Every structure is written in C-alpha cells, then in structure tokens.
Length: 566
Image (tube, one colour):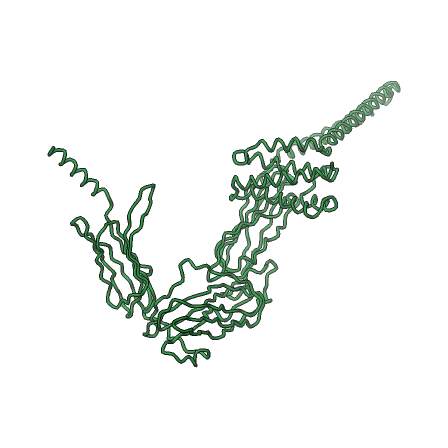
C-alpha cells in the first residue's frame, strides 16, 4: 500500500511539472507621451492572488477588469486568469513595469518586466471656442474636429474625426455628426474597439477624451471645402451642449504641366508589376497577362490600362479585376490586380509592347511614370524548314541553268530533229497538265466540303445533348473539364441564334452580332456568364459553391436561348 501511495504522489508531481506554469505582463505601448493612455495586462494559468505594484507617476484610469476565461488550444481546455488596467504617466522618463508575482501550491512565480519610455507631450490644452463661451457651469467641455491635412490635391485623402474633451467623466451622450460641403467620395473607418472615455494629460492637466466618427474623404474637385461642426449633448443631471469650430480644407487642382498621357486619376504612392503566364503558346491558346498595382491612395479611382496588342494576339475577354485593399487613415492600402486573357490568333514571333503606368505623388508634388518590360511571344520559332526550302530553291536554280545550257548544245548539234518526236513530246506534256488540273480541282472541292461539314450550324438536339453531358460532371473534381464544355455549349447556342457559324470571330464581335437577335436582358446575362467563367478559369478565389451557382445560371440561360428558336 505504501508503494502505491508513493507511486501516485510521484505521478501527480510529474503531471504538475508537465503543466506550463507562467505569468506574463504585456503593455499596449512601450513608447508614449505624458498623458497618453496605455493598457497594462497581466495573464497567468495559475490560480492565486496576483501581487503587482504600479510604477511611480502612473495614474490609473477607470477601465479596470479582472477575471477568468477559458481558452481551447488543439481541442484542450486551458484556464487563464487576467487583470487589466488602463492609465497614463504624469512625468517623462524611463519606467520598468513589473515584475508581478503569484503564489500557487506553496511556490512563488515571478513574471517578466517591460520597459516603457515616456516622452514630453507636445499637445496643449484646447482653447475655448465661440460656441462654448457662454457655458456657465462648474464642468468644462470642449469639442474639436481633427483634420489630418488642411491643404491637399484633388483625389488625395484627408482623415477627419470628432473629439470631445472633458474635465469630468460621463456615460450618456447624443452625437450630431459633422458635415463636409463639396463633392467627394467618403468612407468610414470601422472601430475595432468599443467606444469609451480615454484619459489624457494635456498641458499638465488631466482630460477625459472621446473620439467619434472616423472618416476618410477623397475630394474630386478643387476649391474650399467647409467642415460644418459636430454637436454632442452630454447628459449629467442636465444636458450640456458641446460644439466644435468650423474647419476649412483647401483642395488644389492637379497640375496640367507634364501630365502623362497614361495618367488616369490615381493619386498617392504606388508601384506596379507585370507578369505573363507563358511566353510560348499554340494557335488559339489563351495566355494571361497579370498587372498588379501596389501602394496607398485612391485605389477606387483605378482604371484597367488599355493594352497595345500586336496582330498575333487579341483580347479574349474583359480583364478580371481583383481588389485586395482596405481603407485606412491615409486612404486605401493594399494591391489591385488586373488579369488580361490573351488569345493567340497567329503563331509567329510577336512582341507585347511596354506598358506605361502613371500616378500623381502629392508628397513629391509631381507625376511619376513607371514603364514595364516588353514580352516576346513565341520567340523560339524553328527556322530549319525555311532554310531547307531556300536551299532547295537555290539548287533548283543551278540545275535549271545547267539544263538550259545542255539543251542549247543539243539544239546546235541536232538541227534535224524528227517532227514526229516533237508531236509525241507535246502530247505527253498536254496530258500531264490535264491530269494535274483535274487533281488540283478534286483537292479543292474536297477541302471546301470538309470545311462546310466542320463549320455547320449546330442543332438544338446537339446543344441539349451537350447540356445533359455537362450535368453529369462534378462541380469540384471536374471543374477543369466542366468550364471548357460550358464555353463550347455557349458558343453552339450563339451559332444557333445567329443561324451561322462563328469560326474565327472574336467574342466582342459576336456580342455585336447578337444585339439584333437577343433582348438586352438576355444579352447582359450572356456577357456576365462569359465573365463569370473567365473569373473561375483565371482567378484563384473560385470555390465549389461558386461553380455550382454559375452552373445553375448557365442551364437557365441555355434553355432560354433555345426557347427563342423553337
């Protein structure tokens, strides 16, 4: 029995040692100014009283939380005890936060420490404005519209928000937003944290601050934009009205001098890259050109650049646009992709010219143009056959000269050639020519019949048969087979509607021919279907559910087109 108890205690000790016993201090900011709010968080997996001393010159705020939570990591539950406290430093200097200690199972555990550098604040106490001069109360409130820049260019972003300063805390208020007069695009910055009073020390005095209504504006015309002030009604036994001063924003026009031809309205700081999927392609094969714009600015004004294509290539469909940017205080930030599907219509060496990309940089106050590299398509064409043909022609010319020389010598030596021999020779030559013409005529006739057979107008029965075949494919595992089949079925249906073959006709030309054959709604559905299929083919974001939805719309469109011909 003693051995069993000893083994049990040993196993319990090993389990306790195997568990990670930790206590951690985290600080939201390690470099702050005097009066700037920060948050100190202490977490531990141990159950016990956390002992912690706040550093000198640290003023605690009202946002204090303490409790327990459950975390699930790889299917296992873990208990976490936490303690959070906000506040600010009242004096500049270097401070060491921690360590915190906790006692558990007779053992004391110690946390890490965090160094915080506090600088002198550059803020001053906000001045009273005209709206608050007659506020006769022992409590003082101020309102201010913060404008990131008071002078910008057309298309440049400006960040605005409303900020309320108070000497005393409050919990109830009603907000009337500010308004900008002028023509602009407007986007709201969503708050990631709940609205709450923050404590700041400004000019040596403590203030409660509240930030509201974070928005980004993109003026589209030059002029003076007036910002009408916001209003806040603070409820504390009575209603206190807080207003802000008016603000003006000067919007300057973009300069006409040195404006590039390729400039399309982008304002900010950008870079761009161009890539091609394949430099070698067969006849009628579709390759893709990827153009990526990276940076920060008015991405929403971007326009897909037009390509100057050589005669060997044509734009198979409209470019697919992929947006991967988000709004921030300095405008949209991220990247924008354009994917151009290009069809090879002539298999020979072709050069895709350089692409110019231009934008206006408001910091440098000038236009910037970037130029991509040019691309060679089918550059490695085999010229062996051409050299062989040229060599054969040269040999034939030499042989012909030699034969003519021999004939001349033979003529001079045989002036008395027999007339019957000449008649036989001319007869043989005539027969050979007749047989050659007959053979050429038969060859051309068979070729025309073959082309007529291969490019005949499909029937409704053939289209329905292909539609039933498409219905048998799985939308996820067979997507590589399914998309070409759906495009073929759309092509056959368009041929049936137009009652002609569409061989060697581009998609845009086909849409023009269909204007008189289809109503606007059906034609728009057809264009959108081709666009959706291109997106699935060339984009990396397609899913099984997306293809399933497209397939359902595709079946309805085909049946409607067939109903027009029955």
